[in-house]
Amino acid sequence: MADQSKSSCASRRDDIPIAIDTEVVMKLWLNEKYVNNLPRTIRFTVYLKILDLLADMLSCAYSARFDKENRKTHLDKYINDLQCVKSYTRIIHESGFLTHGRSHHLTEQYNLLSKQAVNWRNYTRSR
Image (cartoon, rainbow, N blue to C red):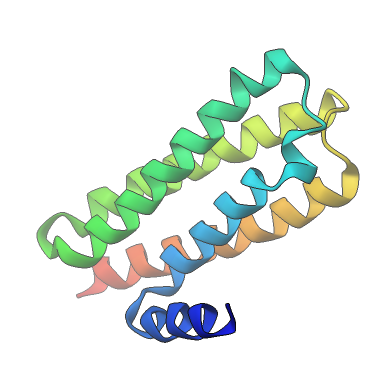
């Protein structure tokens, strides 16, 4: 099993940091500690929307990497989707279904993603 993780890490060398970090956030949301504490109504509405948005964000990151002509558009969509994910997370937290610690950890991850996307978009503009 250790060999699998080594090969997985080796293939990530060529991956872009924003995609790796977006995957980290998706894995956090897929963790049972997060999902099991959500009521059924939240799990089948807002939670699924968060996962859909995160999947779209991952797609936008790769599209921005390979579609240089439309990179700014893809990054703008990424940033917009991230804002929606932040809002949904805040709603779940303020409703009492997400602990303060988990919410804080997710917020830190979101801030990292936001900085990466904005910096990349701004770099793209200046070229």
